[in-house]
Each structure stands twice: as C-alpha cells, then as structure tokens.
Length: 356
Image (tube, rainbow, N blue to C red; front, side):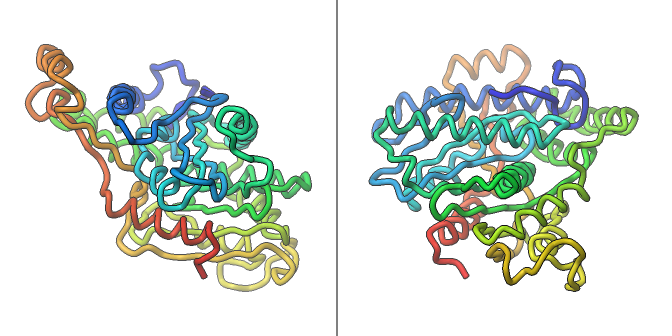
C-alpha cells in the first residue's frame, strides 16, 4: 500500500495525528473482521489482493472496470469502508472493481500518480489471474472526497499526455473537495465519534481533534496542488473532447466544492461567464452533474462490525482492556446503507450510460 503522510499534516510516523491513529486502529480491527467474514461467506465474492490493489469481481461477464478511490484515511481501507458501494458496482453494475488503497500525502499529485500506476498494474494482472479482458473493457473511475480529487488529477494527467482511460472510460466525482488539513480533521472527528463510541479513546475524541487542528495550523500544512491549481487541472480535463465527467454533489455536504469544479470543467466562471484559458466548452469534455438531497459528505462510507463479527474472544479481550459496554466488545458502526445505495444507483446509471 502506498504510504505517505497522514491527514492533518506531517509525515506518517504514527505520532503526528492522534485522531488518525485511533481511527486507523479501529479500521484495522474492522479489516480483520472483514477477512474472517470473507472466509466464512460461502457464496459471497471475496476481495482479492492483486498487484497492490483490492479487487472485487462481478457475478457474470464484466461490463467494464471501475477504479475506486476513497477519501482521506478511509481510502486506505476501501474493502472495509466502501464495501457496500463496491459490491453494488460489481453485483448490480457488472463491473470489476479495482480499489487502490493509499494514505493521503501532502502531495496529492504524487498520490494520484501512484494510485494510477497501481490500478494499471492490477488491470494487467487481472487478465492472467481471472481471465478478464482488461485491454478491451472500458476503464472508469469513481472517486469520493479526496479520492475525487485524486481521480480528477489522474484524469487530467491522461488528457495532458494524450493517454486514454480505455474505450468509453467515464469519470465519476462524488463529494469533490480540495479541503484544507483542518477541514479533513473534522471528517476524522465524525468517524471517530461513531467508531470509537463507548471507549476511552472515544471520550477523548474532541480533545484529540483539537490537538490535531492546532498542530496542523502551527505547522502551516498545505496540500499540493492547492484549490486554485487543482481547478486549473480540471480546466485541462474539461478541454479534452474524449473526456466524460459526472459531478455528484451531496446536498448536505459542508465541504462541497462542486460549483468551482463544474465551472472549471465547463470553461466558465462560478457565475457562469466564460473564463480565460479554458477553451470552448462546446468542443471540450462531456460534463454532467447531479445533486443527491440530504446526503452528507461521508454518505458513501459504511462500516458495520457486530459483536458476532468480533467473536467471543475479541469481545472478552476488549472487556479486559476496558473497552467493554457499548465499546469495542459490542461492535461499532458508521454510515447509512440507504445513503450508500443512493450514490451507487447514480454512479451505476452514469457509468452504464443511462444518466442524463
């Protein structure tokens, strides 16, 4: 898995962001549960490790390949945090899902290129391993949150180098944001409040979040490319007549930056006027958009771990460590399955050419 800097700033040495450390430990626990569940699942398609990626196969002949890129930190565990979304893409959409785990570096451009390389390697390996005709299948991308930014940067790189995303490849950007490190800490705080509820660490979440925010502010952490440079890259993609992009805005998303993104893709200002240097939108990319009302920024993320999933031994160990009651021994959850399904439905319709 590509490893770089943790959300909230600094190198990922394990001590820079206490909030991320606590959340990562919880996601590792969920990952172990998911692996055990996969072994017991019978007819449930397992996630497979292929060339550094996590791969989920559809039940029949593939309709295409989807590169799945999750948000900051949760993108490091796509098979846990985006399992429901990925299974909808595979089962209902018929897509091979290739998720590339990553840890968000300060240099988002480098992270995007690394994820693109991992995706290409995994697509090549899928041919020999599973008989998937990767070379002749459309290669789409579904990105959420920071993953949407990485997907945009990778797609813009392909446009700049005259590379193709594959026959008929589409780009689906959900809850696009180019948020600051301090804003991302707010998202980690939401996740931690849910996944660490009832534990000693859960009680300390507000304090840990405050420490992380102050550390990020003091360090002057800034991601590259910043918002302005990211939107310039969007303009490059918008000028490519081969590109097909859909921007999905979540109606209750406080971090949403879709208006600026759409303006850059279409070669207009946010007020709708033509902007300098973005070319004729009539000769550029096909760009569509949608708003899913009432959904928040983390709606595509869903994690469920029950006491039965943990097992008696894990529950007893959690109780012995003082994590009992409503804490680790009793399971944990985050997300709304109906919200995930709403995003999946829109993404599948778009990728299969049904969305307007």
